[in-house]
Image (cartoon, rainbow, N blue to C red; front, side, top):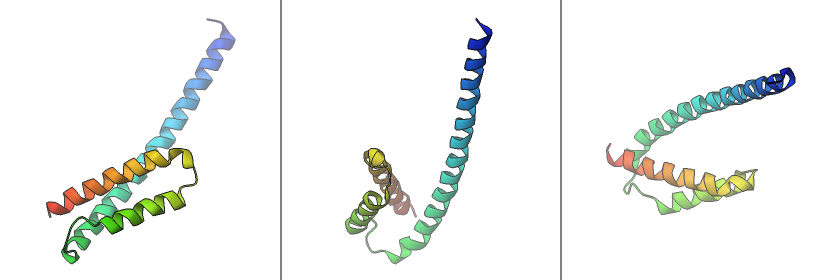
Length: 95
């Protein structure tokens, strides 16, 4: 390989590693927020008659659509929160 090509490859690898490190930091923050969310679910569960709340799910969906600045990821955000709400219901059923 030519020296210039090697330098370009190394720069790309460094950039990739740097971006992955930033993703790792975000992932840790997501985990911390998830733990806080599930702690709140423990507190909410005794106050609910029904675990599944369709009106609440609609509000969450509306908030995602309203607050999401990058609309290209909307379908992914909606799927993520749909799954998160399902997990929340499953978790509360076990409490």
